[in-house]
Length: 147
Image (cartoon, rainbow, N blue to C red; front, side):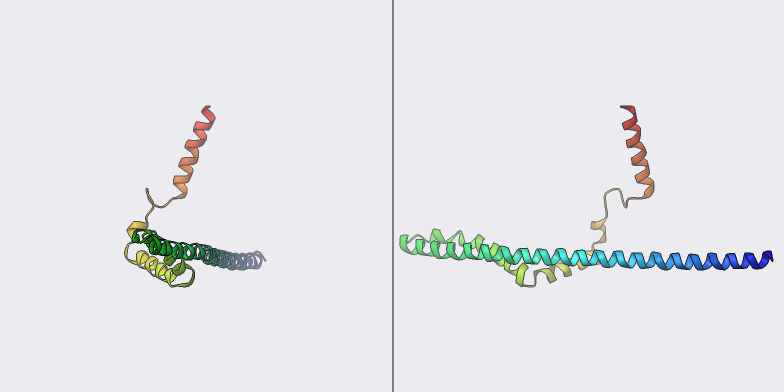
C-alpha cells in the first residue's frame, strides 16, 4: 500500500515539475515577446519623430537656402552661402534616418560590433552577480544603521 502511494506521489511530483517548467518557459517567451514589441514601438516612434522633425527642418532649410542664395546674389558676397553647408548635413542625416537606409546600416554595424569587438561591450568590473549585489546591499545597510 505504501509503495502504491509513494509511486503516485512521485508521479504527481514529476507532473508538477513538468508543469512548472512549461509554465516558466511560457512566461519567458511572453516576456521576450513583450520586450521585442516594446523595442519595435520605440523604434517606430524614433522614425516617426525623425520624419516629423524633417518636415519642420526641411521648411527651415528651404527658406534659409533661398534667402541666403538671394542675399549672396544681391550683395555679390558668396560668403552668405556657407551656412547652407552645415545645414545640408543635418538635413541629409535626418532624411536618411527617416526615409533612407541609415537604420539598416546602423543595425549592420551593431551586428559587426557584437561579432568582432565583443571586448568593447564588457561592463567595468565584469557582469553583475548576485553575490556582488548582496555585498553592496550589506555595506549600504551597515552605513545606514550607523547614522
